[in-house]
Each structure stands twice: as structure tokens, then as C-alpha cells.
Amino acid sequence: MLDPAEYDDVTVTVAHPFGDVDATLTEWIERGPGPRRLVEIVAARRRATGEPVDMSEIPLEFHNSPESRRLQRLGQLPAPWGPPPATEGYPPPID
Image (tube, rainbow, N blue to C red; front, side, top):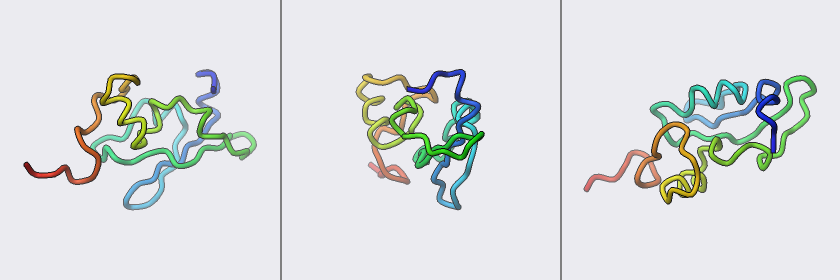
């Protein structure tokens, strides 16, 4: 697991409907997914060397993946940007 002191040295690639976006892990943690709740980290690398960072090194609560959102809904994982959508998919289903 990455030490928080290393977050500024890690660039994450976030999958976005209009194209992938790169940010430091620190920036991603501060901003989160915003209104597009279903964007997620798909890759990571060291800024200094370009060396890939295994996704398992990034705390799961920051992935914003289907699995991390599921665990957050169950209360088994912190939700750093507030509760995830009640259901997966976008847009949410109409009742």
C-alpha cells in the first residue's frame, strides 16, 4: 500500500466519457469524481520514473470502481466523497 507521502509522486489515469484524464493521486483524492460519479481510476504510474504502480497499491476507497462503491454502500469501506449512487449505471433508473 502506498504511503500518503508518496501520493504526489503518483499520476492516476481516470476513465472519463469524454477521454481519459491524468491527475496526481493527491488531486484525485481532493477532487474525487465530481458529478460524474461513475468515473474511476484505470491506471497509475510514478511521476518521477513513469514506472507503473499496481492498482492494489492505491487504497480501494479511492478507486471509485464498482467494487469500491459496492463496499461503500455496505458500509465496509470509507466513502471519501460521500455515499456512492444507490445503484450502478448511469443515469440512475427511474422508479
